[in-house]
Image (tube, rainbow, N blue to C red; front, side):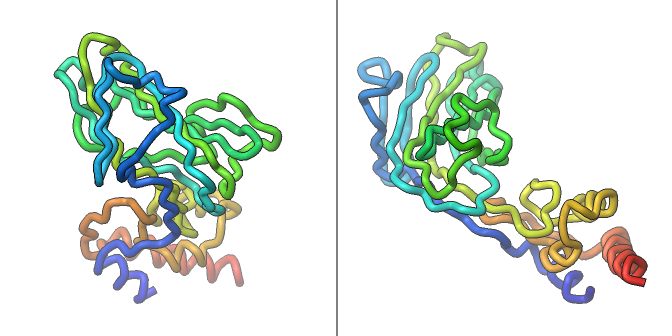
Length: 243
């Protein structure tokens, strides 16, 4: 137990894996299927991002090859949204994946404020499914196509917005992250306490205090009495269940 307390005091180490899809460096989308198109749209493909300035709903497709990401649990999208004040809280980036058997899963983050965002969603819980495919679920070792969209909601076509696509990544939750929120903390222990079938307490103990790749690390305070009591309770429960 001392190891866990030291780990929590020193910061938030990483656990899990990270599978980059694209960093949008000199990105090119498929102009044959674009609703973001010239001359009404301004597209800037640079060395760090892919920027689109447009009015109203927009979308485009991209062939991304084969992304080998078996075990990934979440999609993570990094974007910057800009526009007039009326667009604040209205713009909704959407990423869709299409696998080799036609499964078409959409992940949407509606109603985002203007500014920088790191948006995440569980791969197993898409916002909606356009096509279940021959075999339900995404084949994470065969996702050749990606679809990018922007839903302007009530902002509609009142003015131009800019969406700057920066990074798209598939990531895994750490073992012991029973609530799939990409960190292993007290909430996971409480979930295990209510329902031990969610996973192994050993995984929780081994990864307590970790965050998944891509998740911003924040300062972790010295262990409080509540944390110490939590870990002591875990040890006591294990001894009780084994006796």
